Length: 102
Image (cartoon, rainbow, N blue to C red; front, side, top):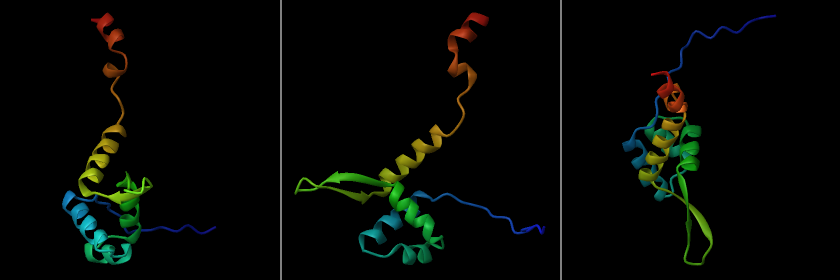
């Protein structure tokens, strides 16, 4: 059995707010995700995921829902997801227990 040893290290960087703004502007100009990715030097899947995750549901004039990407909303959603992914400290989980100890 052979093992594949990959010696290249990958470093991932999160999208910056200015990049989200550029994604929004180019997406509003109907650029495809692949062209946006080339312009920002990112992978196409990164742009596609960002457009899906940062999209908000709106109700149109015809009372039918549609999705639109706003950079500001996407940044807020990103911050909320980052805050929710961290572990909660024990003092926050069981404050009564720690009050009883002291």
